[in-house]
Length: 255
Image 1 (cartoon, rainbow, N blue to C red):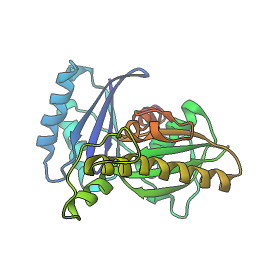
Image 2 (cartoon, rainbow, N blue to C red; image 1 turned 180 degrees about the horizontal axis):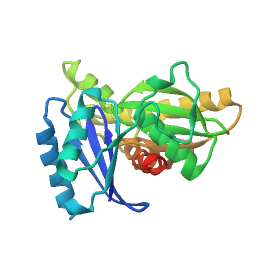
Image 3 (cartoon, one colour; image 1 turned 120 degrees about the horizontal axis):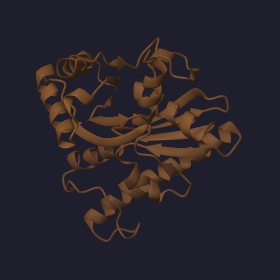
Image 4 (cartoon, rainbow, N blue to C red; image 1 turned 45 degrees about the horizontal axis):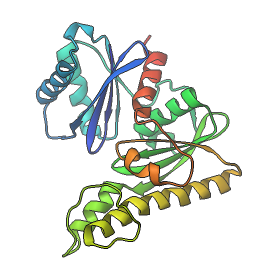
């Protein structure tokens, strides 16, 4: 089994691949204060839930936007499974080019999502990653990453709405029956769900205008299944795009 691990600001997503098949996906909360021993315990417990034996793990690859956790998670994996994980960064073969002012500043998770979109679905395309922040990436017809727009995330806006106002409550994130809210909770749900869907639709129009063509669109991330179905554009959802990209990159670098 190959472990693919995406360390995000909110969650660490762990995927387990047998050959090219993703057998399981689990999430644990990101906490940069925990030690390698604590993460080793968590990771081993997650794999035990999915009946993965210690001897089955033969390799691992990590993407991370939380640098303090990089060495901690690598040490945890070494401690449990005696593997040296690949860490996405400079010098790693990805199969795509990055044309930005500072390629090394592009988030590892964004690279992985674009690698998967390019290799699985083809280019050109837009890739929308809805996590702590919402990112919209562009891949041109040659499979080159040419830029990204970063937007405050859905949960970030929802928490700000509740915490920075005196009378608005914390609510669950789901679509109301109507865009016209009749009570406080439905009013907030309408703004957060339909408002973010409209934001994404508007940004897609701007990307298409600038690129001079209608791009195919793929969405991933923990919140995409809540927001994307309410967009007016045709958007394909692949919640495991980053994990699939990690596996593709692992195969390119495993030697």
